[in-house]
Length: 242
Image (tube, rainbow, N blue to C red; front, top):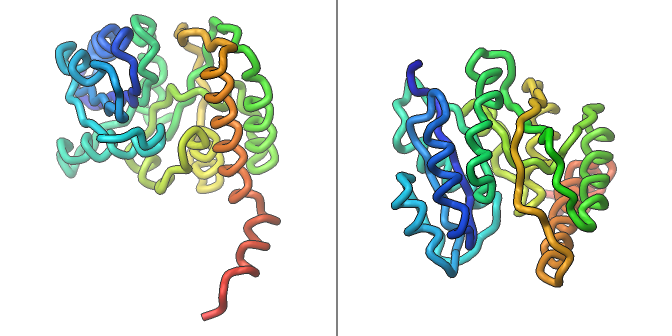
């Protein structure tokens, strides 16, 4: 099989898992490039990822998931041949060895059956307090497009380069997945969910975990707000006339 896919892994303070994730991603069929975006980590994430075989791009400060995705995609573009851009497989840094099961996400894109695939984890890890953000995203996507997303916040996605470029600029931070789904469906791109046997590290219930979920809720709400027709119309009315 000829190489046609690059893996992009946004990572912040994931030194303990990034090596296993990188090695598993690099072994996927058709993958010849793994780019890790070290998003302002305070640990050795970048060094460990490089030692595991990834190309590493570093943000000097934490800029958020969407910015890391765009940086990674741009790094891939600079290495692409113009007539054969690679597909982009985005994976989270904490997947570890389970990233080796991501091949089914690539296959529909490679076959021309989908422009973006979204992972549905067959093994669910209980996430404390996570349901509110999921429900907000699910309902927002359904209301905007009619699409009933199973796991709307899942960051494991494979896209054609054309689909990725059509979705730019990406929504801020943790609103990126919700916005990607809405924007691509509205533009007529084909989105397909694919079940995979992956697993995240479980999210806790301590203060840091609660803060993370609060940021998720904020970013998803912002992404949905600017995509609601009534909100957009009102924003247009408030803009000064030229």
